[in-house]
Image (cartoon, rainbow, N blue to C red; front, top):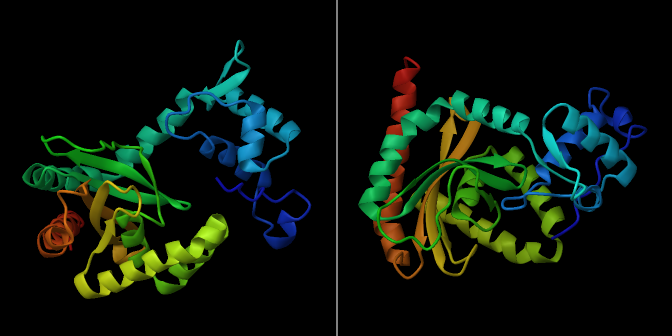
Length: 271
């Protein structure tokens, strides 16, 4: 894992942006450091992951604990995410009306194809599932709401990039290049290939790029005339989802699912 660049200190950040609150940014970076399946982290681990000095981390974890966003285990001398984070997450999901609209279409498609069908939004250089539906058959991996996937190697991440305006996309690509370092030339080739696929088909593919046994197809959901971009994917075991199945069958059907979701959203907005 590449070590993230530290959040700028109070002496340099205001000179660049006087509205930027460094203390708030650092607190949020600490909360982001908790990964899936990692229940407890200590101040030293949080400092290492975020690049924030340990004395500052200690003050931030104390404050976040007092506010309910972290819970402190005195025996382990470590922290876990607290109920305040859950409350924020539930409020976010509750406000995402697209989930209620998209879920019936996604579930129907998942059952028809025996695949994972998920709706995702970007969080920095990851994609986070905000809705996920599963078929009834055996799945090689079951990913649910809250799952995080890398943007650079997954179909859903690449599709999200394809849905962005060019200037914003190039800024994200520059951020990905910094994050992935020497791995970037190979990853960039995959992303550029996905852009060609999107131009040709209207969807992107990932054939074992993220995990060797998983393949997926995805397409962007461009909302509010481009003000918001999400993406929807359909994935499963690579031995089931051949290139031709994804290009000739799943991809076009996924585009239709996306079209129907957007149609329902526009209808609900009175358009």
